[in-house]
Image (cartoon, rainbow, N blue to C red; front, side):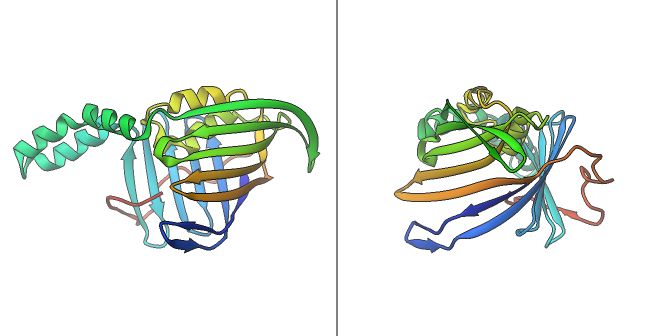
Length: 235
């Protein structure tokens, strides 16, 4: 799938952010997913059976691996500290439960509500149905989307949504959002969203440009040869 997102200009923490366009290409295979941001020249590869997401920076030819749960994340951090500071390493092993409680307190449970409006229309060659999607992300803000989805495309959109938002999988309420999103029948081909957070309002429009079923090019789900493994690449 290939999609384009236009984000309008907005103010955040006293800073003006200009409008921008981003084109993304997604490959969805069995137990694997890849997303490429063409403008930023970054990629993310998710192997669901390994519960690891790999973030790739093509400009710097670097990559990092991020576990998709707090327990694993802190286990690795503690292992790195073990040789340098045993006491700190032991404290870090106890962090996952504490962090989950802290994040739940700070964010509250994430939630979503999907409403089937019953409206239909054709977008391009696709027969679509309109849904209103309202989500709450605690301190992350609230959003309202008008989404047009089609069942003409035979794609597991729940899997695609879960994979695209995998970095949130450990946050409280994410599973409830996934379950609610199953009410959207088919693939979203046009989505207009307004997000309100920290006194700012951001609008964006995402449209599906193309979708097809074909074999992924060789190496699609592999780390490019010669790339260096580092810590802390942002997705």
